[in-house]
Image (cartoon, rainbow, N blue to C red; front, top):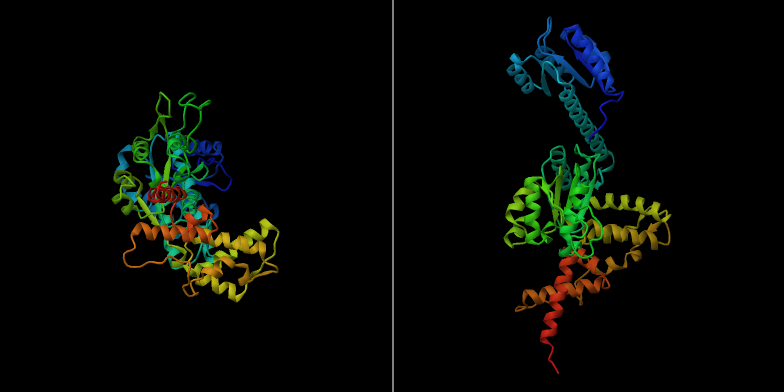
Length: 467
């Protein structure tokens, strides 16, 4: 987080029997902005903790009356969240390591290196900030059914929150999978928010929305004159996200060549801009996402196996909305609040019939589709309640409605390509030709949909008799 080390709420208790060292540490820590209290030994520290209420205890290991190990045991009994750092002479390092196993955060060898102490304290404060943020999110989950920007209190979503909590404080790569519209970028944002990189940049990049010829430049940047049209130097996503988090959406849409270059950056932690002569080091965390099953993408050759293993340290698979319909009322209320504010409306809820339609619908476009539907309904609603008539698209395709003409007609002998073509045509008709929305409903990227449409057009041209 690169958080300033000094804040009045960051209170340190220095426990040191040597008066000169005790005063020296007190002055050093005060110069960094900490509030500092001191104790002459472990027994003195135990008596002062209740009134001082420190966030960090910096204690010598060997002291009269009550030593560092005994102090650690006493403090952990009543203050399990208190962070204890031990200071030790070189000859007692083994004992200090034992203390870490008993709950100490770390140890420092004497004489104390101020730079090492400063780095350690910054790490502890970042950890405290993350833990504080986690407590806030857990309270939000209990009170409002939200976890950061993610909405839902279902069993399925609680499992996702638990995985995010485990992954966030680490520096490990995360691979998020799930259908289009399930909220993969929200997961990436929450991972970033709860990580030590939270105050640094979060840079999202949709690999499916960028032509293959430009993707490498978007990732690594380019120097002036690197190619036709490169009239100035341009920073890429890796440089922009340095010290922060890079979110690569639709990773399987990258060409194999670009995936190989990405793998090299993840391994070497350095890259070279297009047209550049020097390697640039980068400190970055990557969260990647795909709307296809990652192992299946590997089998199909869409995702390099070595890149998959590099990214798949933490795997988070988001459930589709149809598998967590209990969350729909929470999502609706959140979207109503958002769009009432944005569009100066005062819609308070939905009629029973409208709610039934939303709960019965299968939501192929997932949360994103629900959000779009609520936005439109909020605008067209004539009163303060959304009626079934404000949901014309869903009323026509509700899962509770009987099957009718206009859907794909599949019979024995229909090829996979023919079935796919029918499905695409029906979906495009349903969205009024809106390809972006159709791609969301089909669970594919817009780029993939364009590729399929081009292949369908070429096949049609080949079958058309020539004059």
